[in-house]
Amino acid sequence: MTLQETHQCEALVLAVDEATRAIGEELLRIAGATQAGPIDWPVLLIENPGDALRRVHHFDPGVLLVCASAKRIDDVSALIDAVRQRRPQLSQLAVAATHDERVERAVRAAGASHYFAIDSEADRSLLRSTLVVLGVMDEAPHAPHSGLSPPRRAARSPRTRARGYEGIKP
Image (cartoon, rainbow, N blue to C red):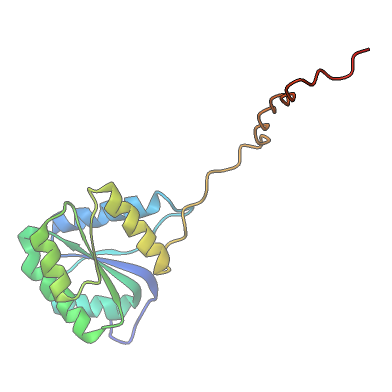
């Protein structure tokens, strides 16, 4: 790979070890569950911030998704910081397997614009919405129409007669 070669992709997923790579694979599964076609974002295992910068330059993503864990938080923070310094306009979303306050503080301090824990349904929903807003995912399709007509309106109750009015008798 030379530095002149670039390949535009919607999103790039970076991991620092096999455990965080598993987070990236789960992220693709979650994102792909609401899409008509497959999600083909690269999930790359990187060795250091320099490697991350080369990959970001090569793929030129619209969004960078960084997989984070408490075990490797220093490496993840260094990666996010290096990319932020050289590509400040690039949206960086940090994704963790479970919520951890220490991880969230570290990735936000390093420059991640968002933090999501994929074990939380609320965070998964926010992640999907964020990816839609950032333009890398389509909105979830609405439920297909069943083809049936809508239900009839409830029948009106007969009008109440005014007191003392018996109507016309034959």
